[in-house]
Length: 127
Image 1 (cartoon, one colour):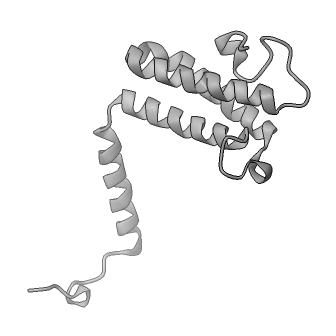
Image 2: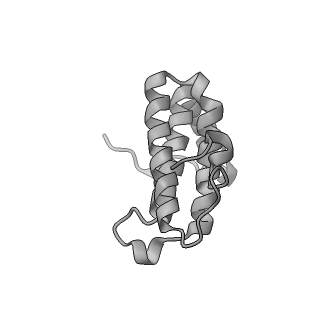
């Protein structure tokens, strides 16, 4: 027997929005901190990779100013989060970070001084 939505009284407009918020809160409560840290890092890493030209259409996607911001945020998160995640996760994230830092250096027409590139205040000089 299928239910017809018109068979039930309508919930107040804000009720479904509140139900969605409650469900999202329950969902995030079930996620381990390591998962949240690594997922956020992967999103930052992916966005930075696109902005430094490591995507399909680099000519239209390169934006080094945006890439610098993303790499700085990624480096800070990885540096702060590394002690909290396993060495396996931290090593992979650091490798990805180093790759986008090097790609940034290659894409930049005016090179930053050693230790002054994006994220290098957290990671040290990358060359």
